[in-house]
Amino acid sequence: SHPSGELRVEAVVATGAHAYTASAELVNTAPLTGTAVTAQVVVVEHYNRANTASAVATTSYACSTNSTAVLAVDNASCALSLTGAHTAGAASAAIIAVSTDGVLTAQTPLRVWYPVAASLRVSDDALQRVHGLMRPGACAQPGYQSAELALVADFGGEALPTVSGVDVTSLATFVSNATSVAAVSGATVIGLSAGVATVSLGNGATSGASVG
Image (tube, rainbow, N blue to C red):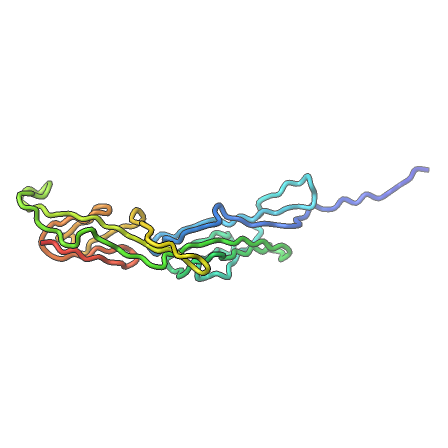
């Protein structure tokens, strides 16, 4: 007679998962620029066999957050965004991913910095006519001084220190409300004719300049 036995082969199943983003620290610049800051949450599953490699399984998870004042996350795609509609930062904003069968849960904390204050500054708010100087490209028009614009912000959030005086000028787009009086080129405001102009950016901060 020959001995007999039973061999049971267990199915490969996920026994754990972890979630992550490319960076665990994000800065919400959207209130200053009008452009959302985005990132992707990735969920990786680990299996019950040593020779089965861990694999990305984001599409099998639904994502959410309890930090809705800090960020938003799409339930289906697990894509997150920081927008101008958000109002806070946080030392630990949690993203929670739950498998569609409800068996596995993964969580990743994010540190999010928010611009708690911002100011728009101009190096000279009274642009004078420069006698003897004519405007380039318009020789019949007198030339005026120019000045430099700067946007400075303080960043912080819940349980975060406040980092003050961060120069974010390179992120901003400046606009003049009186382009016949003063024009903006990059971060430079250029006087064109006598009058008063207000320079602003997307978040509503303003700085006045008189030209005379």
